[in-house]
Image (cartoon, rainbow, N blue to C red; front, top):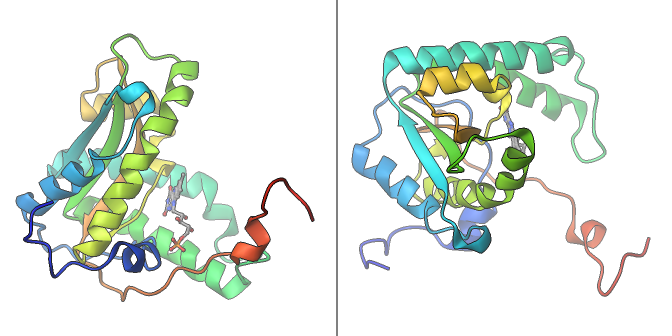
Length: 215
Ligand SMILES: Cc1cc2nc3c(=O)[nH]c(=O)nc-3n(C[C@H](O)[C@H](O)[C@H](O)COP(=O)(O)O)c2cc1C
């Protein structure tokens, strides 16, 4: 590790406050920081150490617009019908869920204006089929989480998103992907408009058992 990061937050502080930050400023993010995020992502493990993750940092207005249009299709189909009536989850009351939906809509309206959209991809070295793409997922998400934590530590907002990627052919066209690559996650990155705060998760007593599952 270089010693220039002494002012960065601790790993645990980052993990416990790494919320999906969807409302972002249009202020440019220095290229050096974008490279730093991808470098952090690139430290993650991969199955058989294949290191097939690839990262595309989109700053070009035209490409951002294409991805924003694809995201709009995904968001409108997925959350459009439930925006004002989102229901609730045992761990997320209706008002919080509604706020989340509105943040997703805000992101939909502004995606093309955000400073950088980072697309996490995998390169398979042969034409990708559905089974291959599914199997590849385990080797891309550790890097995505590294990137999210690095963004948090640097005071940058980011959120993992997948709704823009529902049409792989259109995504491949937008990003000039060869048929040996697949895209898994789109991460908008920028300076946050809102405040960082703690994540809200189920208590560990609910999700953990020792030695085997018990109710
Ligand atoms: C696999 C995956 C897909 C996701 N897709 C989207 C998405 O398409 N759009 C979006 O706004 N958020 C997306 N999210 C973010 C989740 O909604 C978010 O992590 C979750 O609501 C928890 O939010 P919090 O970390 O702020 O508590 C995705 C997260 C994951 C892990």
